[in-house]
Length: 93
Length: 245
Image 1: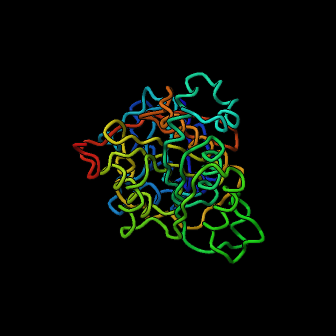
Image 2 (image 1 turned 90 degrees about the horizontal axis):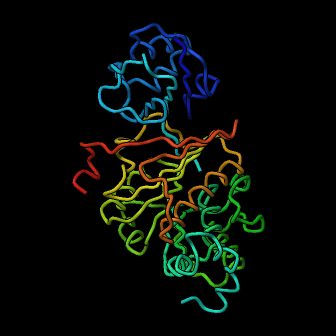
Image 3 (image 1 turned 30 degrees about the vertical axis):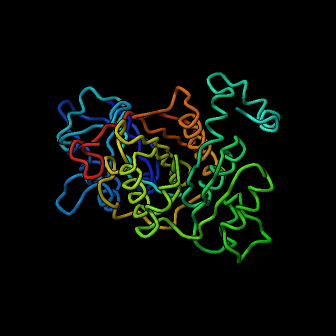
């Protein structure tokens, strides 16, 4: 399955792209995808998303097909998702 | 009631559906606090002045530096080394002498939060630090005052209209200070101004009682492609700031 993943703010800086197409297997969850993307994009990318315990930071917004995801974000099932945004906070002016 | 002078100045915007004389009158009676008047806050204040806001309160500490001038469009080269708020007031008053402009040469802080927000009907958050943003959010929620939170980074930006009790507050989205945010950020002034205009318009719609304010949404723009998205955002049940409001 193909998924479009968009990156904003410092995540976009860390990956060097604003979005990319990613192939995922059926049953893939957000935590697994972030681990895979972390291997691809490196330590800085993972640091921006994950805290010292490996959990998604509370200040990262996860947006699935245009709506903010809530609850246990790490376990979000991506099967029916076409568009995933990972948003780190910005405050520039 | 609008004065003849107001009618002459704002004639063309009185024709905008949903705005009209009543919207103009409401705007005329409103006070907006703009916190930081740099690349975002400057164009916000400029457009509010153009639209005929009654009063602007501009809060920003420090003197004008050369590296401000790629984006801080209220400033003037001749004012380098002088307080930013004074340069901004001069520009705004020469542009629209009919509005009141109060300047505060301070950044938003615990010490001045209550004093600044107390006088405002709406707050425009254009600060570069989350410490200021979250403090402003807390104060606006406490006083039930709308907050238009504007932010940008490089070629992207976002605006979140916050109405306490109706929408998520900033702390619902960012419950703590993000550890990786840095004071210095990449910026082209045109991107700041673009984001600022979205924020100014959302504020004008709120103040004038117009429909179409993007409540419960974040307006996000990627200026590298000019793709704009409206993202549905949600209140956090356990938000330490707006829970119970």
